[in-house]
Amino acid sequence: MAKKQLTKRVESEIQRLVEENGYSESVLKNLVLFALEKEIAKSLSLPKLKQAIYQHFSVKDTTTLKKSGNFQMATSGMGKLDLSKKAAWEELYRKLVGVLPGEENEQGYGCINGVNILKYDLPWKAFGLDPKTAKTEDIKASYRDLSKIYHPDNTKTGDALIFNRLTVFYKSLTERF
Image (cartoon, rainbow, N blue to C red):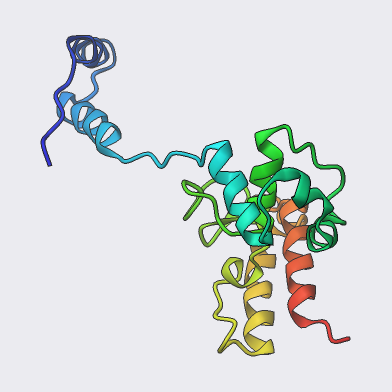
């Protein structure tokens, strides 16, 4: 892979930061080069999102999709979807097809074990468990560990929204009907 070159503007900004703040020039250059070399996953275009949803429901267009009984049942709990907007198609993709490109191994608020639990319904992945081998005790142990971190009573790392979402995941995996 060819090494990227820094522009004059970036080099002068690095020099300014070194002089004003005493930062290490080599550390700043390495950081910039790392950022430039890091591959950024592009989000799916609207036509590709639509095509994936059409394939999922075996339809050819949006009109047929809206009339599909399977689509109506799959989206009945999702509220009103504005299919003229890309955000609605992304929401459908997340719920019905899988993880969007660029959202794999996410980090940051709401992300546990590489999955944003506020966007995705992937309890097994959030709990770090294999659905084929995990036992009820494994689910309970994982939930207990995560609860210690995200319970609202924890003043340092507690978060009611994340805790409630984890509780929904836990119940979905352990409740018997």
